[in-house]
Image (cartoon, rainbow, N blue to C red):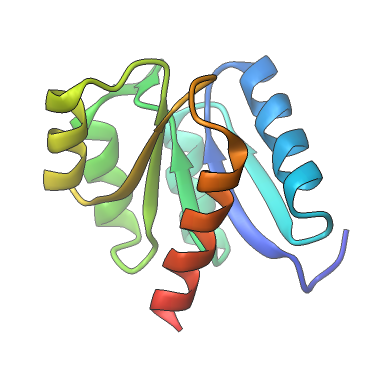
Length: 129
């Protein structure tokens, strides 16, 4: 647990997906990221108010918010923090809506490898600096 790790907020209600993504990020980029989990949108929004994050990785299907509403809430709470959508299903319409609501990138759980996600995080973080 080092202070020089890039802080990422992962808003995901499935504990197995939370654990898996944190492990995959650590394997792909050892020591680079500190993943802060939130299992509900409300927890994620609270975390955004208490600590700085380089990016938010957001599931679109949460117990207390869904889809575009979740993206909008995160963007409103932290307008300068890039939002990366990670969902079980992302068709063209959902991807377009995500972008319209302010998502910087989107990935499908289990279909996209971790490397493009790490590359997107790096690109988004460099773009802010």
